[in-house]
Length: 437
Image (cartoon, rainbow, N blue to C red; front, side, top):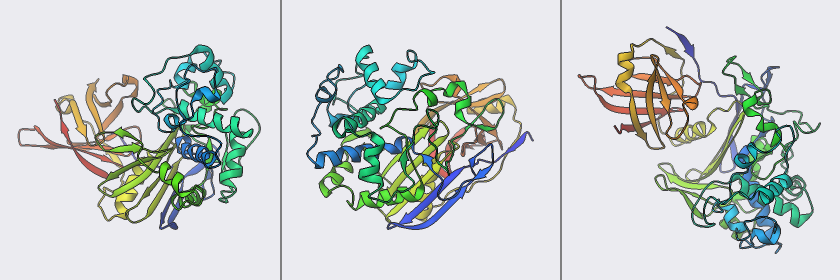
């Protein structure tokens, strides 16, 4: 036996039915180094879950006649070379705008905090080309939502934070919610803050990403808003979701527009993007959702119309919040799941590991299994080997991810030891796949 592994979620969970809380719990620490426990009032960085607040802010300005969705960037930022891109295309990720992180990374001074006006100025000076003609296809764009936040500021004369506070957070009594991007750039602080931690490959301990060089962008991008940086609690997010679903914030037309399928994002699973939210339908019925990811954080806010369930999962150790949310939805609908347990690694001969080398397709992903130096690894198409994850055997036919993700692969073999079936178990949900070579 080579060791024992227990997949560990750290964060807060809330489940509501018809807008009323039926489950709310905290698991783990808000500060790993000081071992301070989380509670229901702990505040988390939402990452891209923030985008729906930016979208709502734009729609509130639309309702007041301050803008139109067919307005172009040329009307607001004539210095940018993307004059024909519309607000509608920014909202739906069909703008073709280049990713600001990618284009700024090699040029920007990483010791200097960047703000939205710096992103606009950078794009104006360096003029990186569009990925595609605006409106021709979908490509998730953080840049688009940064520009939407900048449009809000230009039209109102307020900061993005001030505008959201006055028009959304205060009216909905979201008292613990704020735009918070200053932990590294000034002395602003939140008393009950859930500090996001990443697992260090060198120490095996959770650490603030600030201290690790590969995450230095959490410092120099600390002033950028619109695509992330709304911080909130599970309770405040329920207030928001209840208001959004019952047009207590937006008028009925704008709410319908926000929650309508504007652009197809996933042809296989029939997913769509609205304004700041994703929409889809699966075996559990129709849902709206959005997840977020930032070093130390993994977040998701979902609502299933069947059963009228809202599920909020906020993790500050990058655990798979989307996977947990989906598992909870299964349980709420009476579907069986594989419960978590301690995984005990065993040793297997390389000849047995090589039996599983190959490419596989599952409902939500494709992957390849490769063998190196007597170990089996999961490799994702288009990714570098640095992102490969070791698969540790716990039996002759079952393997678990060694990176503490709650994912296992299980194989069926015939009497000739040939693969006749393969399953992925992701946060307890077991799905059949197929070997494709």
